[in-house]
Length: 319
Image (cartoon, rainbow, N blue to C red; front, top):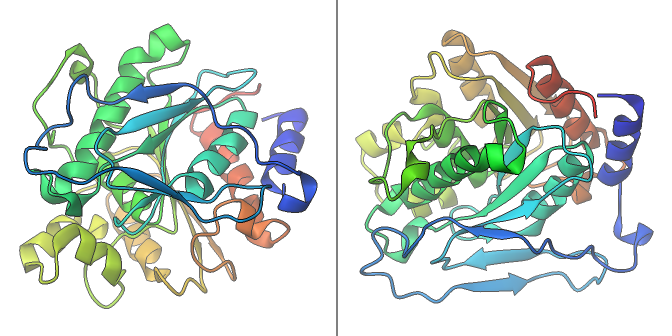
């Protein structure tokens, strides 16, 4: 990453509502994940909606609920470097935020030349036949589509990363660690691998086990009284990570929603499995800080740290 890229990234990462009057426009390019209806929707009766929480015209703060037609929103950089990134926002598996951990983060990585795909995924409590694996079906399909389309998009199919935040970090972790395809192939794109080439996990919901579990995410994913087998199956630190690609962890020690032990336990599991891993723990930042909420604070450097780490692992090159 050269000096010009670093300066542009720093400017994007520190942007605050004071510095702009109107929120940047939404990208117009979207990709439907499924050629027809999403799998297993015979008993689904919800109606999709997106709610805006921001009252400030300088930024959006939307969340999507009851998604039935999952999509990728594409942000293409002015000067692409061949790397791509699947972004999976959080929301406790109750909804998926659109901006804070999606579009806002994507704009920062796009400024460094990375082509970004923001995932709007289905939620486990909406009646899908796959239940807890419905979000993972969407994540696997999304990664396969990005890889299958890479040559036509001018992207390197061997430089596709995933970035997941909070519950999206759990989903990104499952996408990275699990080897089982969660749906039957629907077209030629499903011949592609769904394994990312590296993973960036922001304050991830990693464990489903007490005492460090984020109870809301576990309830939405596994129900009120999950079995010990389900807890083990969906806890990232209990998965087999042997031979998997590099992982980058970011967490605030003062996170009151998803305890930092989620990342610490996962880091121990990654080290035991021999996975190249790097972790950055910040004294303060709370939960869900993403980009906008930490402008001017120490944790605001995490995108630069992630890009430098990605460069060391061959994900990005100088723009």
